[in-house]
Length: 587
Image 1: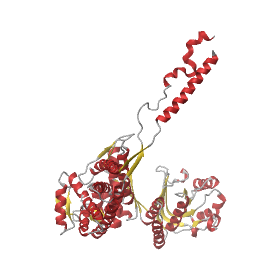
Image 2: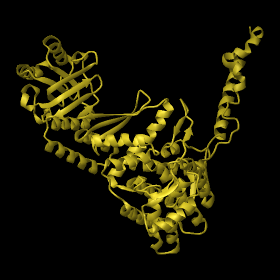
Image 3: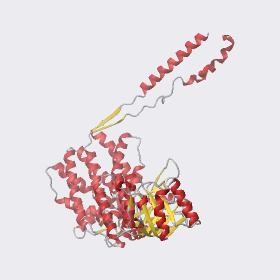
Image 4: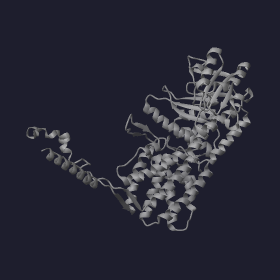
């Protein structure tokens, strides 16, 4: 009987394996391929749906979008790229179109920091027209060449319309427009930029209260605090503050107490105060000796670890040496801690060290040396292609040349703070872009007027000329969308502006008040870099999408058994427990 049970078990196992093989064959996936107009129309459907969702946020009377979150509260935003990133369709072909548009928005955000909504509506407009043209028989490659040539000409015209900005008022206007006409945010950003300079760092953080605040940190600040709480001069506030301080900088870890003794003797003899910044900190007997001298002898000393990692850490230490007018003690140069004198140390008027960060004010370095170092960092930024290295170099440049401004965003709830932070980040990026390349009249009229130069552009054949027409029509869309979002008829406003633009290219439509105004005088302006980047990215992507003749995706799975094991219903036999009723006949 036991033998028969074993055979039965073997049969069941064999059945399970066969069922598994059958199941696997049933659910093997292949590829789905679509061609021509059918493929482009499905892709266009995804583009339209995503662009419609993003377009509602455009202009001073644009609306918010609420995005469901898989965890936590829903997100309310008016940021185009955030809306684009949140959209994904179940239809794979529609989703391909959405992914390509999302890439345009991301690119505009990475390069210019703003203009993502404009880039999205431009791409949709160009791709729609291009799809119609290809369906009517136009050659997509010639169409693409015409679109690219037209884009180049419009960019040239934008540069002619551009005006550099310098004053605080103009910076405030750019920030206000980009923050959805929020004057408070505009003033905060203009104040921060005035305090830290054009190359200074402005960061955005959550405030503890309801109000927005700005905090400006002058001098060099980095994210490394005290190595021991015994170094605190004020136990209540948990910080160490000292004035007229000497600064020791080294690119090695200090563990040997003997190596520090000669320098400490000089410091004690001259009654100086000392800040030690070591690459990997101060540890073991060296740290114990410093703490002992601080507690028992009242030695004015504090030790911190250098910020950053690897090559970036060495570069920051060199920056600190230039800033304080000292030398970096480096073993690579054959220097030893035992031989360091007070003359090789840097100086600072005041230092503040907390548990988390260090601030150095009034470094003893010469202005010319600091400026020379800044020029070197700027050249390094131009030379590198790594975004990570550019970010780190820009951070170093800001700390050396200006300071750090912290915008603290307040609100009654996490959702409100998040929405406000999105607008502030957009405004901040737009302002930086405006400082770099200047401004053009806002409200979409810059593209509208610049595109009028295309009226006289004639290319090699009909299809290329039609590509020019595609770009010209698309350049009307941002202005028309802004007016439509304000509840008015965009086509009528555009027609009137094109007629008036032959006389005055500064004239535009204020969607907030519903009046025709001088856009520059009214402070309705856009950064040239933002408009230029949005147009270039949209044209490149739309013209490339128009050349699509075949789309390949994963074939959708057919929902039948859902992958369930057909033997699952016999689970009662696990461990042979299901055959317990046969016990009397077995033995």
